Length: 419
Image 1 (cartoon, one colour):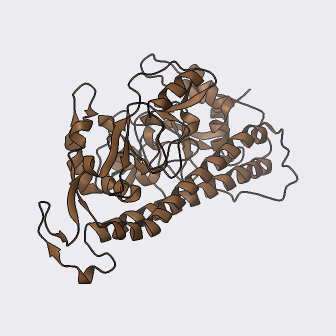
Image 2 (cartoon, helix red, strand yellow; image 1 turned 120 degrees about the vertical axis):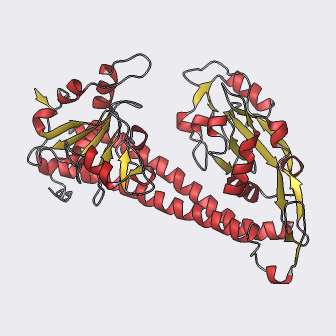
Image 3 (cartoon, helix red, strand yellow; image 1 turned 135 degrees about the vertical axis):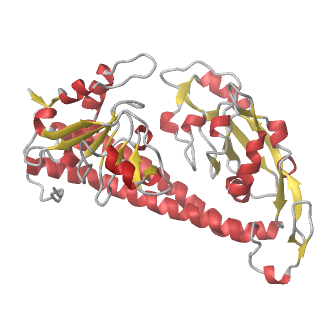
């Protein structure tokens, strides 16, 4: 029997206390920052030099080390990338494979695969919050491993998918930043094409370009509603029903939606719970209010639960302008005032409709939509492409890890990880 600990130089538990955070410094990798096969370093909180030294006394994480989440969710794992010096947050574990026996990238995919991921979930203890014990991690039984050169070839194939996904993620971020910056330039700073010839006039929201007006969400939308207020029974096969958990920053993730019967689905379609092209979807639950806001560029397949609000713009405002208006930090700060309730915070839609906004002239909106709308569509297309890449990677991963797909004679290799 080959155990994980027998092939590792280190398996080190985290500090069992909360690290004080700082505005900048070293990334603090908590369980939410550990994904499936990667660490979300860019969004992690930071700690200062003193905290870094105190929290890495047992071991300083280095390139090629793995960080495993023991909870929330159990078994997520990611590899420390080059040039990053992280700190372990609570309920995480540092794993350093032996370089002469186990390639770290291969181990990253091995632990992310269905077999070992399923085992970790099965041995997790705890009713309220399942967690993985250190003893179980160390004694984890590994399958028969191929030689190091073959491990590196397997990792190289799978890493090619992830490299494409990461490249697309960077492009998505740039595209969305571009669209939001352009929104602020045109509709907050009023530096839109031709602005030099349009004077500013007073309004109840301050100075605005002549010809622009102040309106409310209720007046610029033909419909403001939310999804179903009752939840049909889940079925093994059927049609998708989305809730706030199935929203990404720019679209609905159909693969995570639960399924309902065709009869229940058709009933909800008749109740207008299926969003159309041109609608703007808003995460509506108090904890997630405005976390996700995006225009629909095509009719949805899924119907919605009430945790998602649907804004159907009238001819007064374009969907792209409406979505970017709701995403704008100043508007978001004001809109959070419409969240009410203590136990289950929710947005009161009748109050939400009263939010005031500056309404640009329609020809200006159309010019903006031509450029920024194309940028946002491209971001959505890249997200769809990433979903297909992840599906393809996850399909081939168990066959590569098990050796069912023989890569021995392929002329590929991963570079050695720096010691």
